Image (cartoon, rainbow, N blue to C red; front, side, top):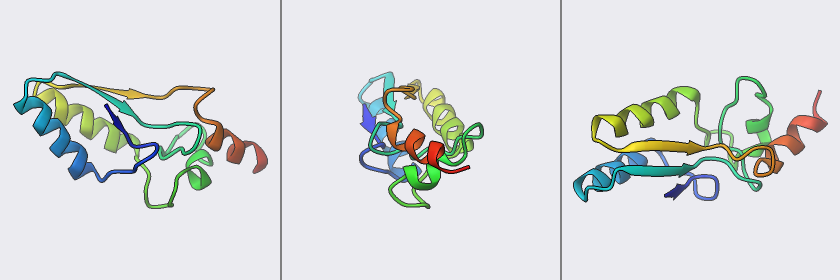
Length: 101
């Protein structure tokens, strides 16, 4: 498991993690992407959630980033499961989304 909701990681570090997993014959990566304290994912349905929901504006993951990581893992025999625990674990994003028009 990696928890980028609490500790944002660049894609290259996530890929290194996947490489290490594949080398060690681990085949499932649980990617804890969002949580109640941060929302570092750029939602197309609710774009305001990542504006203030992420720790920094440049520390977000796009749909393409998530697809890239999932495909990278699949090519190495590692299934990546991005976790979007909603609505309970996205408080920070919903709080921002609700107060802005």
